[in-house]
Length: 124
Length: 108
Image (cartoon, rainbow over all chains, first blue to last red; front, side, top):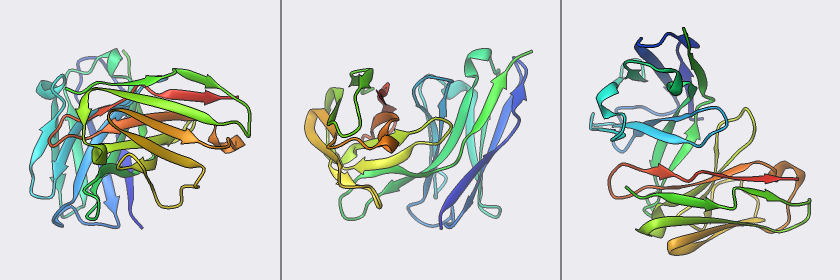
């Protein structure tokens, strides 16, 4: 069974750096074709894609947040880590990690499964 | 960047009724890269449809997806009480960024 679980601080202060960890089970980050993304959702608002890391360490970032984000992986721990610098109250959101899957038969791409999410509040 | 616009923002219906949700892209996208998700309060999104029209594993056949180019539709043929939720469309291009729509809330 494939599962992802996010962990990190529930509260950070403005200007601090946020570090979130996504712990994966059921597949290996080192397996060809594996891709994991971070997505966030402010309370009552829509989903926003943040970053992606592939099995071969290729990385992609949201253009609007690129200067603040770093995604990395630790294959020995099967974890993906996201850091976001200079946190602001507008960054208050539930942060999700999800596997980006490509269907070999259709060529489709989609997120499945998702972690349960972790709520991060930015406040002094 | 491709922008996805979902309409309506809120859909007020009763159990047993048909729900039709729209997702319009700012430019044409390959339908294989269009997915739909359901999100209930306090839960993570769940994959419903991928490739615009293919149901994910375990998704009831009352859910169907259609469309091409810039216009895509999610249809719930007969609403069950557990279907009242927020629905998001999402597109993935040949390279990031990918994007989500703003969501449609289906409420009783």
